[in-house]
Length: 73
Image (cartoon, rainbow, N blue to C red):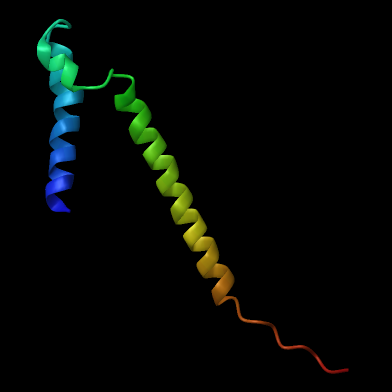
């Protein structure tokens, strides 16, 4: 898991930080997606992560809600 994370980090760092300084016709450009995806992919991942966290918190709160005792009249 750490190796996968490290590879993704290095790939993304090269893609975002170093690739803008490489000429457009250079063969290394073929190894990377267009730069617009450098913004779109993290935004989508962040929205999905926040959604999953929100659903998890909602489910935990609903399950932990204790029923209120009924008053006898």
